[in-house]
Image 1 (cartoon, rainbow, N blue to C red):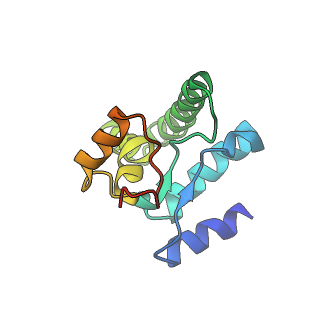
Image 2 (image 1 turned 90 degrees about the vertical axis):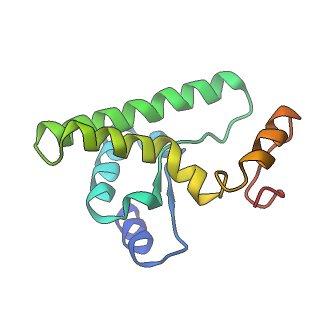
Length: 130
């Protein structure tokens, strides 16, 4: 249903794609879907960052896997001449960092976010951060 997800995310303003568990579907499927979505879904509606895990080690591993998928997909697009390296770097930053901050309005509430992190509070979309 990944094709359908891309269409829904493209046309519905409140639908975003979070790829944090996509690697469990397999490497080739994840690469294929990310590439497809880069062609069809607004770039600000795709996030590759995140992890639904409890330990710091798993968070680190999830971040490495996410970076690998983004690097692999974008390097293919650069090699194909789809866009220059500078644009690939910009897209990578959006996918891995900025889109999440914008989606959950963490830039707007930066001080609240920093204070919560310093105090060890878990930040969630409905947990008083927005």
